[in-house]
Length: 265
Image (tube, rainbow, N blue to C red; front, side, top):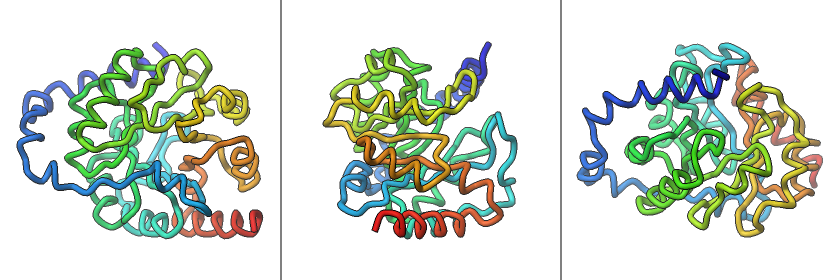
């Protein structure tokens, strides 16, 4: 199995006992489930002058190991992100990325911009869980879902007030797109090999439906890359490792944004 297949197989085993303990109906019967305010990432990306940056909090990756251990508090990092980012992405997968749902809910509490739960969603139950823990947006990865599953999951997400990003890596996966999807992300990292090439985004942008805000993901380490991607038509730029690898991710983000503003003014 490649790494994506390994992660998905692990995820199926991981969620089964939780689905029994806390079924979707239990989430939906909780009044708080429907009272959680939803923040729109689509709107944030379309605001004139938006940085478009979706700044990510992740503790480790399968390819690079640990960036920050469990001792790293999420609050100071996401508070810094909150100042200028269009949204915040939080990795919640524990076995491979060192995250957890506490990182997600803490982020929601101390920020006022949209929060994306980034995980490997393979079951509708995870979408209800995301909503219950404060997510505004979910990620649906075409490489591990069928077109029918994407439509089903995006439809359910929309019904409970969540936006969705369909993540693709090649033109073939564009066939997974449907009306219910809110945004379309292009991952420059091949999830099967972990190789990164920003040209993946540039080669696919012309094929993305104009009504779906386009987001470039992974491999964005310079302000010049954002300028190039924005000129090509992208509205969002998901950046994680570039900040999290630094001693002070929040400060690294602030410096990056200042440099971006100088370059675009």
